Length: 283
Picture 1 (cartoon, rainbow, N blue to C red):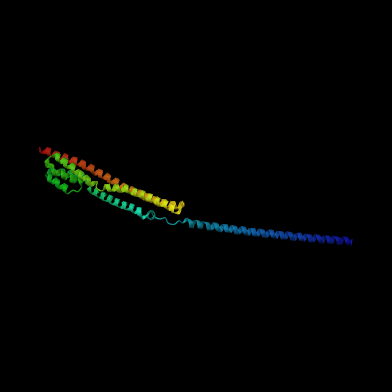
Picture 2 (tube, rainbow, N blue to C red):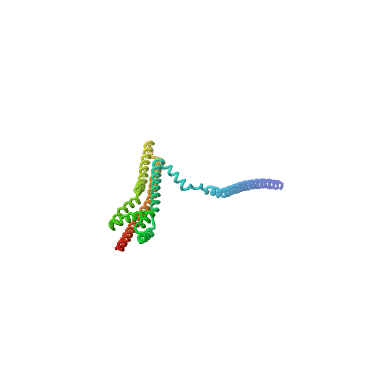
């Protein structure tokens, strides 16, 4: 009986030791799992914190990068492109623009000063012929600026020689006044044609320089070719811009001259009619 009890005691002790080992193993495993979970959680927390920090920092970075540098003005860009095009041909194109604009401004001022109130002038001459005669009408023409008054004065100078001489004098002096109105317009048209031609010449020379650089380096580099072509095309662009600017002023000047010539012709016909009525009234 004692043996059986001793055996049961030994068996119980063995089972207790095994249970304690199992418990220790389980506790150890639970501890390791808990530690891993804690590390994972801490890692998750750290990663989430990092993500939050990145998310908070990202808008700042975006905001900082979104603030672009102030854009250069039109004059600054134009100056940079002018320098990139080269001072040689770009300077010649600029001189063509300056000279062309100077001639255009001179013509516009002259034509505006040559414009007179033709209806008022004709009315004053008609009244002067009825009251003071030809000399009074000539005084009015002498004191009135413009080509119309000059033509009237030349016609009144020949009024004593008959209407045929008056008409011939008006036609002859009208041609002279038309030549004065059209003065320097040929130079403006020259600069209009010359500006793009200079630009094209600069383009051709720039292309030749690009091919020379390719030959010297023995390598067709895109950067090398693109730089030469860019410089070459800038001269063409500026030449076309100059031509377009001068063409606008030239068309305005031509339209103004045509208007003045039509006014001169109509006024001359009216003056001949007035002189014809004066002769008819004398008869």
